[in-house]
Length: 410
Image (tube, rainbow, N blue to C red; front, side, top):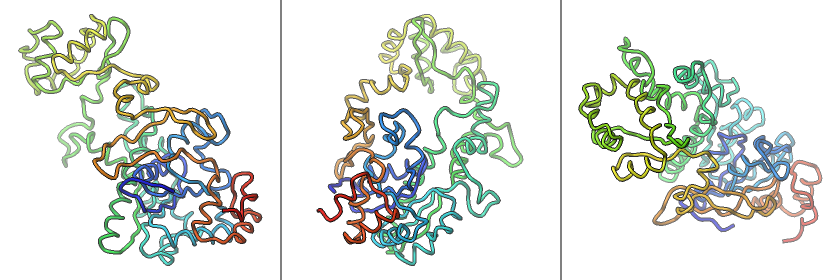
């Protein structure tokens, strides 16, 4: 398989499912790693989350699993477990998102895997740090948003604890897991030593939330309340314009404020004691944000956007997700594009956001059908044609319908 990117040549055995783990392996796959997506007979749970043209190929799955190849293994059978052990011998990374005790019961703890391949990076995107009382609890995005304080932060904006309208904990921890894997690979390449890395969901997301919102509780004893007041203010939001559209602005430094008040036709406010500098604005933030809401309602969006751009005040129109897909900047940079999936037809795909001067990552192939590459990956793991037939017949390995017919053909 042709690959490209800085992780070209790295083989990842990906036993994750849902969002957090697959988002981690998506980053590795996009960077050029050869990701073998190892699924159970029912497939990754995210295959059935979201609209789909065909069962098991949902919108969410398509966006999380490109650049990966799928094989279905029954790890509770000796045949399936034996295949995985053979794959481990030639892998660089073993990535999982099950609870560690489940990995131990399957016979694939770090000690088990290290015995086969001592150079492997064994990475777990787990729910909770394993030295705490929650070690064996299940973890999902909503639970982590609640436990970390994120849901309570919304209380001051909307009047009750609320979840953020995206699985933000899953996504953040997925990125952190990919970063940890890359660091462990670098260490392995320098020292020759593999290792176990655990990325706990609770602690990782709590770091993100508390870094902003401990606020006065950063000190012992506290010198103020918790919560970054500006970001929690209910009036901090996109502003409705005269024509019913919404504009987001980030008027942050003194220069921006002076320019904004000039554009708004209120130059008198630039030297108002309540708004004259960052300290005064912080003390009067609620009044200032309510004032912005009134000001933006007086003119249409296009007029605001043109005048604010000319004054170099950071502003942008508020998109829906569908609107973002058609954003002219994202289209021109190639971030969003339409591709032809071999089974799902035309789909809107999301590009790789970074720009590289060399070893540029690419979108090499779309998300796989369940078991699409089972036979191919068995061959690459060194399994003979006779063994492949036996494994398929026993159900230890499952491929797409018709794969039994191609065993023996190359």
